[in-house]
Length: 144
Image 1 (cartoon, rainbow, N blue to C red):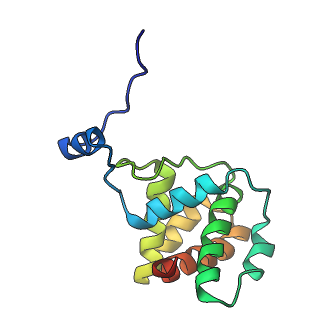
Image 2: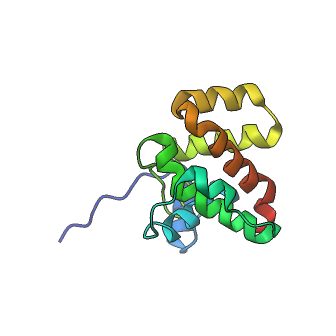
């Protein structure tokens, strides 16, 4: 019986971590979003526009809700379902790398990079809502 080919990892440390049952995290925020994406896969459709208005005034609840809504609505903003790997995976998909670059740009106040990233993949009607959700997740991430 042959086993399925494993995805090639980058670096010896990743191989050792996998052999010991642990996974090196690409980024804590990315792992959080991957976890939320897996947890919300079976939940119903949420409209991005209405969801932004429904977030709680409680910071902790709002932070978790923003993560939940962001991952449930990301496909709507991108026009297709994003490719997201499992938590702890050392590699990043193109969608994950794009999302992390956008989060970093928003967190650092790099408006020109954030604008470029948004214009490259998100239609004009969804940009403001995506930025609102992602900025809330980035700003409140420590509370989640």
